[in-house]
Image (cartoon, rainbow, N blue to C red):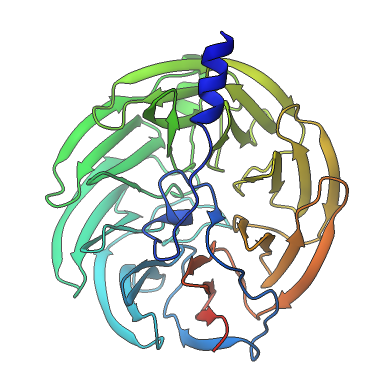
Length: 407
């Protein structure tokens, strides 16, 4: 057992993002939120350290993704019932093109914090794939980098309760989608180039309440026990799948029935949070397949970040906390008094946390106390997690896209 545990420790260190990569939500399929490279700016405003800013038509909460010199973003025209993929020049901010992905009837009901363009698209540098909820279901649409539509397919019809929120995941030429909204709960993989479904696996879990379950977390792929594993939470279980085939590798009970925040991994533990009906953060050991600890910090919407043996996360009400990753002990809490919907990231030895009112806190990681380095304000409601490429921060507000950095 000690040899197995030691191997797990060595194989569990989350990968850092290279400077030039930002292919999907939070930049990579493991979603660690750890950015390699030199330091980023720690101070900015609507006028200071702004390389460019460009209007964003419509409304959305998706994050930017980047392929070479192009930046992609999704948005929706609520009045017209249309959903679009936008392409910007990432060096100048010029809007290069806008392409219609879908039109029709938006999902009803939805949630006040959701939008009709919440899932972040994915790209392999040649193809961009979007995911939208519309016309009674959720559907994928793919485009090349010049905006030519390549294919589209409906993933499933859904009985909407809060709309959709989970982003697709890109892994080895496959677009993986978690459809965890009744009446069809499954995870499936689609060929990036053709849109053909490669595999589909029905979800397991709390069967008694299965039809009431609805999850919005983006699945993650972690390197666990010597192999890549696709990990999902919700339904009162954690499940690992083979991302190449969809085969269930293992399942363990625990956690919340409804989850939004994506899991993160470190050492031999996977961490995730939930908000209904169980509220808290949970830690599972992938060697023993058992829960290690739980606490009452519910980073329900916002995904946490693991840094230096400590887990940092915020609930959507703005309570930012530091937890011991080994024990779950809550070391400190700081009330920011504002909703938080964007997930934090670590770069240049700092944690960056964006609040919904456009304030970004730059925080020095410290298990002893909350240490704020700076507070930076850009006007406008902010749902989206920023993208970071080549030392620049690409930051979306409601109505504007910013490139932040040194000129």
